[in-house]
Length: 147
Image (cartoon, rainbow, N blue to C red; front, side, top):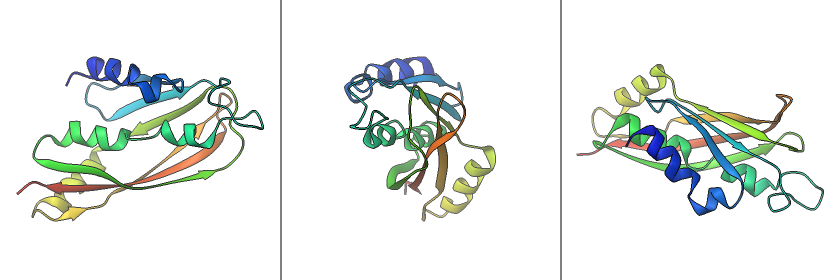
């Protein structure tokens, strides 16, 4: 799927649109995606910071979607595990930048060449407008070459 169409579909997807999550950029090769979320009354919490669930939602399921596009139809790709560590209260607009490198792709292809599953791990910070990290999300993705 072309990145611009994919971006549009994600931006009108109700769970993202309804929480103020916005996909700002998808690289033509799907190796980079930038996602933002403005703070509003409906994605905030009792203490007037970003609701943790919304911070987590803005990171799901981008690594899986990126790998599906990068690796193609010969691979099974699923989210396996996820974890979020809150560093400081998130306020204002927050940003998550997803990047998959050539070396990570090469390692995935090598480790799945014989049809075995591989569980690459990715980690990314969610940053506020000042560039401070408000949370770190870790994701494990299940990847296996189809038989």
